[in-house]
Amino acid sequence: INTRSTPNGRERERTMARKRYIRDYRIVETVDERGRIRSDYEYIGKHYVYLLDAETVRREKRRALLCVFAGWAAFIAALVPNAAPMRAVYAALPFLCAAIPLGLLTDILLTAVPADGPLNHRQADMLENRYPAAALWSAILPAAAIAGAVVKLFRDRTFSGGDAVFLLAAAVMTGAGLRCSVRRGRFACREL
Image (cartoon, rainbow, N blue to C red; front, side, top):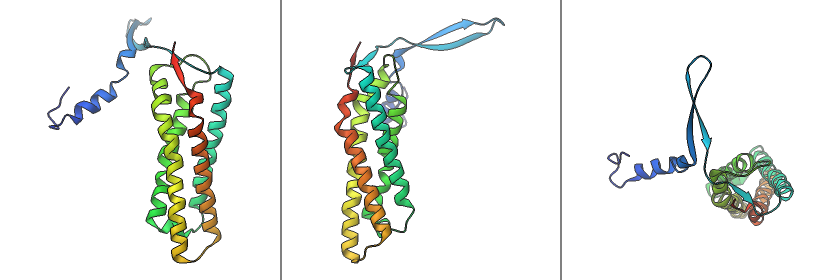
């Protein structure tokens, strides 16, 4: 590992983070009918299972995905009208940054929560470490945008339909994030 590019070893940390799950796989080489060597990988790491039964996890995944898609719909809906809070940095910035944890939640729910079968180490790690943080931040950031919007609306002493759409959308996003955060324990897993 090359650590010469930065004196404090950040490059080494990034390299180690990229290779976190490397020991969970092994390379399998086979020879095809033409005599070419074909390399593939095989998972040999630990397997994990959910603490709850498969049907409960499937139902919870559907509900969490509905919340996340409602959050995305609200996010897009808030961008359409001309709303005064979107012209204030202290309201617009947290609202726009809320797309990051919402995107992480979407990714985790679509990739780390399989329909059936055991989980691999990476999936269990995502559900244990990334999902709770992403769910919490997807509630905190729109709530901060609501607070900023209220400040902006009190300062301007005006209220329009676009402002109502923004506040409603931020409230829907906050509710979706809270619901995912409160029920994060439904995806708890243990080593098989």
